[in-house]
Length: 348
Image 1: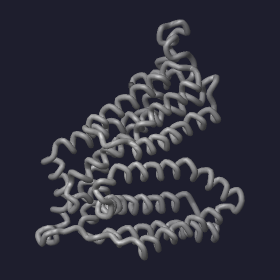
Image 2: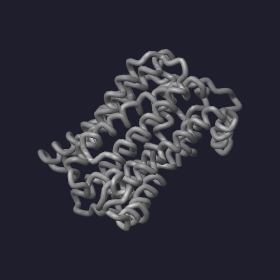
Image 3: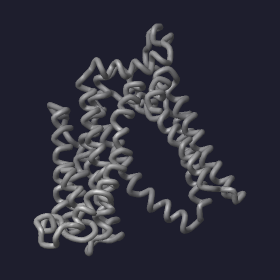
Image 4: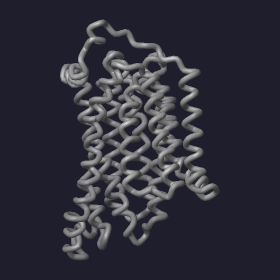
């Protein structure tokens, strides 16, 4: 739905979009609470409410991205993007801890009350204390049909091949990264020196690396060539991490691989963010960002499926048929998990 959300974002008031989307998302949380209190909550409700939340996030995101362009001075784009990445990384690391603690102390009701309280704080902060200027749009843009608005984002990308190539490149990166995410548990859990605790440690290293990388992006000087930074950081991240994990048997090297793989990701995201904000006209950003979301992120579910399928149906059976002393066994090990190692090598 991203491609439609961007067209709506460019036509409507950004602040109202964010307030309405947050309110409907909060209503989903309230609905969970009411169903829970009446002992009616079922999995189908969670599917439906998560779908509503997903749609609200889809509509809100382009409006939020454009709002950031409108209120941030151009010279602070890189630093602000780095700080946003730091904030998101911090939330990713801390929210499971806070959620588990709240649940242990106060049950699911405490979690829901906290969620609604934070919503209220964010809602009234945006409503009362943040002013978002309206972008200048001509009469032709205001009279433009919804269909024309939707096609406008695609047309802009077609007319600007540099941005389109960046987006398609990152779609490929997301394909490999999501396949890696699907393979990692199948690689770590069955290993003799692996298991659930080690998987948790290895995964945490990615969060710590992203947090550190966000600070690097915030403090780094303005590069001469942002596109080169994007390609180099992704080359280092993907090849080094997958290579280390594929050929190592030691959790220490797994952690090092995760750190190397994720440390430079915020730097890539920050430079991409600055390129988009400084290149795309602000009145077009909502629909272009939405087209970016559709093109860049549609490969993620494909990667998850492909990674899992390759491990279960191809790589693990293939390694199981090999001899214990063969070259592949020397490279990738034997037993369950060796097929996942082979798949990681394919992803280098």
